[in-house]
Image (cartoon, rainbow, N blue to C red; front, top):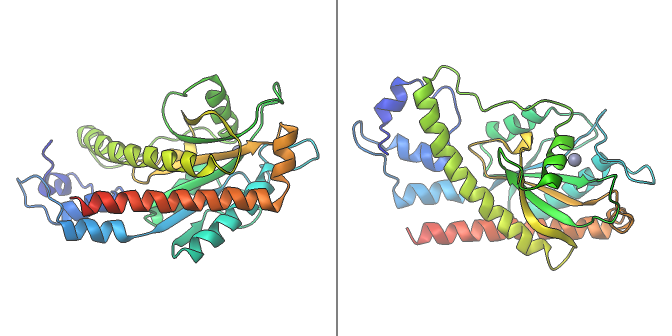
Length: 279
Ligand SMILES: [Zn+2]
């Protein structure tokens, strides 16, 4: 596919959407009429950025799942998010949190925060619940898809999205044809990088916490909808399972989750660095 700078600028694209960093660099250097090229130096520069947005689910009037002992998902995930923030900052990452206290943040605003900061990665943290089956336990990691990977995934997405309806990526002021091309380009790159992050999360969590069977899942989570930023949602454990709930209550378990997630982020950046070095 040929995508010239002139073509994009004429379409008013620059003012209306956030492009991934590598694509911005390529377009900035592109000659009209020529396909964009990305120099090794530009790619390195783009890939050196390490800003992670942590998104603790729910908050304020939205408690999320509620465990047997009146334990709220919104509090558990906030605590895990603070642990993760600390671990990432110690590791030299820049961190932005969509919320750092008990307030309600709309799903679209969470995505907007990540895009406004031009985040490299977006990590949403949640805890699960399935009322009809208290035996189900373990962590799972989700990427975005328009189709859920199974019935459980579909139900999870429904309950996580229940506060609001889904909003679609918006390409205001751009012709439908251009919007289609841009969306395809961005979504493709972001999808590959989201799946890589998901694999790293499964690998990092597996030795330390119980996982659901087939822990790498996909569903229509509104908060994972950014087409520009690789995103995953980690369901840390089930508040509806007594063993998981007991674990979630302990700071040690939450720290284990946070440190495993930090290792996954390290592994993702390392894999990306290798890819860049081999260009
Ligand atoms: Zn949740």
